[in-house]
Every structure is written in structure tokens, then in C-alpha cells.
Amino acid sequence: MTALRRAGEGRQLVGTSLAAAGALGLAVFAWGALVERTRFTLREVSVPVLAPGSPPIRVLHLSDLHMAPWQRNKQEWVRSLAALKPDLIVDTGDNLGHEDGVRGIEYALAPFRGIPGVFVNGSNDYVGPQLKNPFTYFGGPSSRRSIRPEELDTDALRRVFVDLGWTDINNAAESLDLNGTHVEFFGVDDPHIGRDRLDLITRAIDDLRANDPLGDDVWPDPEEAAAPRSTLTVGVAHAPYQRVLNSFVNHGAQLILAGHTHGGQVCVPGFGALVTNCDIPRRQVKGLSLWNHGLRTAFLNVSAGLGTSIYAPVRFACPPEATLLTLTAA
Image (cartoon, helix red, strand yellow):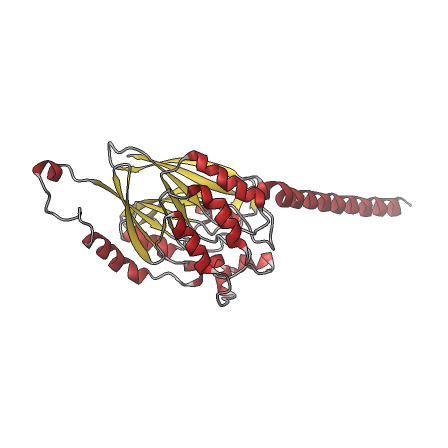
């Protein structure tokens, strides 16, 4: 009887443990799906990257909105960021999460019309979300498994951005003057699906500088020659693959902005992200860090993004975010 009693108690303990584990799992999923996924957060960081004496520049970094038309809370929260009065917007792609997502993007970004901006595309600006087994991400970046033809209205999305006054820097370069600093931008189309053309960047930068009327060695008077303007070089990409980051640093980027990783999306407290969906080191899956290559270093900001796929609507220990970077004098 004693042995039978012990066996029964053991089975009861196992059953209780399994029930507790199941309840904990359901609680974690409920938190991630119903609470944290919409706990939109503004991360604020200071980046000492400008020339000495330069006034600060406030940069709002948006990424991975994965917008669906019914996501009004997200749209209203993004609209509220206009109150920050940024000097510049940088959008690092994956704006669409539904075939009608352009309408939500247009509404969410309308308050930023007239504020200078630049943008690059992510894969979900070309193709819609897919139902996937989440465990396949442990096998490597998702781009290795399937690449579908374009199906979203990327041209309509681009028209929204251009109407806001933003500049397309997909495999291109452009420059702006902001608060007394000449800012050079170069960017690539999404590396995650092989649309990046790093071979075009050198030519794009050379052409940009060759066509810069203030980039010549001939100055109108000696005082200007003694005090040339300060320049900041910024690289922009959706997915922070190492080949892209290394190329950007080689091309003189002092600051690099990217998204794509969702910060890992589901993280373990005290450990961090389980996957990155690219080849960036796990410790740099989100936030501000330094990227070193050769003898050069750049500040790297990877946004955890504001959305998720509609087929994986959960975040844990990784709230959705936008970033306000205040660029300051070194």
C-alpha cells in the first residue's frame, strides 16, 4: 500500500507540475499577445557623433511598423510622436503588415509632413506576412526558406513617403543640411532578401560629393576656408547583416541605423534575444552599440520596431519601440 500510495502521489505531483507549467505558459502568452505587444515605448538615447561646437540634431528612428489598417492604437501612438518635434525622420522599412496597410501608414505619418526624412525598404514593403512555424527561426534567417514575388503596393507606399517630403535612399545617397551640420546619407534596399547593392554605394557617394557645390576646394573668401562646415555620414539599412555594416563602416559611416530584428521579439529576462533573424551578434540585436570593422568604428542603432506579423502577434520582454536619438557634439 505504501508503494502504491507513493506512486499515486508521484503521479499527482507530475500532474500538478504540468498543470502549473501550462498555466504559466498561457499567462506568458496572454501577456505577450494582449499587453506587451501594444505597450509602445519611446527609447531615448544620446549619440556623441557631431563635430565639436555643433548644435544637437533630434532624429526619430521608426522601423517595422508592420501596419494593418485596423491597428488604430499603433497609428495614434505614432501620430503622437510628432509632439517631439524631431529634426529628421529615418524609416528603416517593413512598414506594411497587410495588403491594405498603406492606408494605416498614411494616417499614422501624416503629422510628420514637412519634417525632413529618409527611408529604405524591408521585405514586408514588397510581400505580405506569411504563416510560419516560429521554431524555424532557430534554423537561420527566414530569407533562406522562401522568397515570393512582389505582391504589396510598394509604389503607393513610396508615394506616401515622397508626399511627406522624405527621400528614397534604397541603394542611393543623398544629403541634407540640419542645424548647421551637413549630413550625408547612403542606404541599401533590404539585405534580408538580397536587394542590397553595395557595389553601387561607392559610386553614389562619389556622385553626391562631386555634385555638392560646397564640397569644392575653392571657397569664396579666406574666412570660410579656415572654418569648413562639419559633415556627418549616416548609413541606413533594414536588416543589419554584417556584410552591410562592414561596408558602411568602410565607406565612412559614423552612425548606422537599422531594424528588422524586432529585438528578438520573444526574449528571456536576464538572457535576452533567442534569435536575431540575421547574422548580427545577439548582444547587438537592439539598442545603441558600437560596430567595429578594421580600424574604424561607427555607432549602430538597431530598433526593436513597433509591430509584429499578424500571424505572430506576441512580444515578451521586448516591448515595441521607436527611438529618439539626440545627436550631440563629441
